[in-house]
Length: 115
Image (cartoon, rainbow, N blue to C red):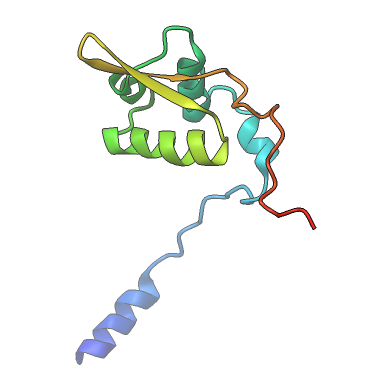
């Protein structure tokens, strides 16, 4: 039996695997409604008056250190546009969302020159 004949017999005997259902990508309401999500837990930790460390965020989410840092930069700072501050306390870096509203109340400056 040739190699290609073996591949055909193996491939034809394989059973189709059901794919898990996924929510549409644009369905933001379904993503925000889950108050027990890892992202909402991290944001709640960052909004606390004491702030939180990367180690505490890693334990709360089971994420690795680079994933926590990526979440802080990509989601908290860029997507949610929250002002994230950090300070060194007892040789540990403590992160906290400054202000809580992300300074959204300030009007945005236009870059156009007046005509």
